[in-house]
Length: 347
Image (cartoon, rainbow, N blue to C red):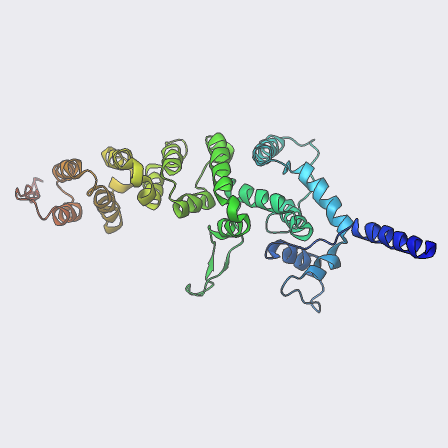
């Protein structure tokens, strides 16, 4: 009986010892792990690296090494907190610009040739170790800092057909987040609005715009567009293009403000839209007026009259304005005809 009890106790101890290290299951779609595997085996064409499986991660590193990589890169990239990670990216970019003007600075370690450099390796570690919070955090960082995926083949495109999908990481994050999706969206908007005026993040942020459109975040979209349309960030032409892309979302709650911003751009005679009477430029002007017409018809009518009277020698613009306002009862003024030139030279 003693032996039976001892045997039973020993079995429990062995079970505890073996159960102390539970095997981990990878999460996500394995995209980062596949990229790391392909990077390592790029010189060995005889090895295939198709769909990523749990065993494939072990061909790269064992679990202890994956844990070490995660801990090191998480500290190096400050990825234990989203706000800290964005701030670290900004500081690193500023330091890189400062070092570019000096010759005696010590360069940082060269990132591997992966889609997102060191971040892809950390992403693969999160996948392998089943670190859901870490993987969600790195997807959020990609979206907030506009780290786009590599261009991919599009079945609809002709020729090379390489396109960039701004929704790529938004979809991956939404699938992974599940019930935490609303919380993650609020976190991304909060962090982005904290840093969106920083020159290091200037320019169109396609992933963040895709998030705003897909979730119909009108207030956040208006704050983003209002800053991006400032002259120090974008030209008048680029500002109109941005507002055209985000117009439907912004207009849900800020129709008057966005119409004012768009129509004000038509009062700049030096803007690219009004630089010439070409079909492309005229279409840009009409597109702005057509978008604002359902929300502020009186001002659009007044703007059409002003443009029609101001640019009296631009036949294409005047014809397009007349076609847009074809339902008016009061006709617009006739175009100015140029008088023939006389030759006053002595004969």
